Length: 471
Image (cartoon, rainbow, N blue to C red; front, side):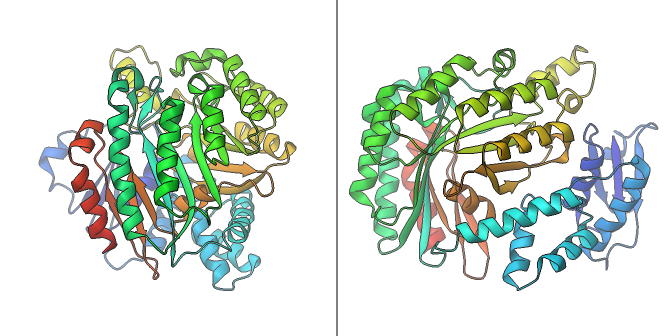
């Protein structure tokens, strides 16, 4: 365990995140106050634990404190982090803000290098993406526009690494129509309260939206088209995701209803790993689903892969990239695995650790590396895809990032909007979060409950939460 004592109640989150970045396999405890004033917590501390004391921070600037910690930990651990002392999840937002202030690339480079110790490689990537995002978003109506997210919280099975709201479709099949009725009530709210505003993008995610039957897909999108003005929509995505949920009839239903962008996600092109992470489909099914989507006329198909999956090395990542090249997606999102405490993968690994079956700490059982990141990045560029957005997560393997690559004109606009937080997003369905972005940059949120049956039982309250947020 790593125990950090702060002599002032300030910056605990940033301090915890920075220590965790250097010691990903350790539990980190950050305590504010004088050492010895936490008897119940100090009982958990053993002589073998590492103790750090940070004094005189009351009047210290946060960036100065993080620089001080970073330098000490970098020296102690004999390593540097690719993103330096940045602990936030949106590094490109810093670069975009500076671009909007009129700063040159050289000035931005110097600022981020000297303030956050970001590596040259990540600085180059960050600047490239910031400029591309600015160009992609130039026609988005921030002030009078909004985007719409609809969550379908059902999946064929739950992947072990997933922490999103997800329920097995087999057990919930009989309530799907009633769930859609609740979504329709939320759509009615949007139609009434966002009349006259510009709807820029629609994203139906999950879960796995293609667990819906063709007639249910047509019902949902048909209701959207009847109630909302879709004439200005620049992108309509359905995250088809799981190949074992895709059929020709569902693809035809989506195409018929005006969907312009879909996802067909392998995560890996190695059958053994797919079994391990609970995907319940094989590589052949993925290839067949992708080709089926092309046959049905989809010309903007995203694929997701995850680096750092248990047991995978550079050889497996290379194989995945080479197989994806044969398919030629229009958009490739490269994720670094983040083991979240709410995921079944964490539970499985934690159980094995407790039983002594896991010979290394949980975070050592996954392994993303600089070499893997380079294999994926080079492979994406070989396919003619350029990086257009990135974000980071807590407990992300290798302290790296998730990056989206796309062909010219095929970038996922919604992905940028949700990550850069520059436009309000109205979210419908169980477990979703609505975000209101004010003109001055202030952001307020309201959430829908995660439990699908509770969501359905309290749908009027969910709508009222949005009404309060946007009144």
